[in-house]
Image (cartoon, rainbow, N blue to C red):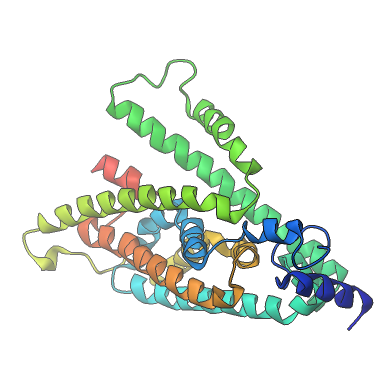
Length: 306
């Protein structure tokens, strides 16, 4: 073990943390620094809530259109294969990070540096930053679309100045910017619980509308299992939509770093991802059975047309 690894290990073991989101080197196990930082770690249920919230987003609601391209018969199988691969890779990622943890590896860049050297750190940090930037951009577009539809339902003229979609994006950015000041996952947990309730309520209402449409069908034979496009030609679209739905991939290690019991992170991944994969299957397949061809990229937009 090199000098850096040795110094990091001694500092971590002094607090009994094993690199759990520390800043600086604690002085002794009973110091106020150790006690204060320990209270900022999140419990296992909090970690599961944060992980589920990090996964549930606009990407999940965009699965119906790609699934309609390959048909309700093939879509569940293709998504299941991709889901298993993604969850398995999450376990591998955490295991690899824990393997290098004795040398102070805590982030994606740290793992990349241990495996590929300094170029690996730079490349992985850049990819992680661009991935998060892309996801955040979609969030603002999703918020503006939802608010726009809500205003139209209320009879508000959205053509007037200040209510255009780009303006709504700016308003959303200003309102959400203060959340970037929250630096600890444990403090985000209440917001994650509230967000999970809101997201799952919205998805439940959407699926309720879809199920009501399915019940309106005269017979089950009307439900469309055949693809609207070539399966081979549309499979890449399902691949991209499914992979994108796993928006939490850049948050796995940070959530594990902030856990009180990091050895339970595998359980957290299995539990939260099991629930999320069920949601993905329902959101992707049920609208296809109800409507057949899905023309809108978002399930909420499709329901607005119906």
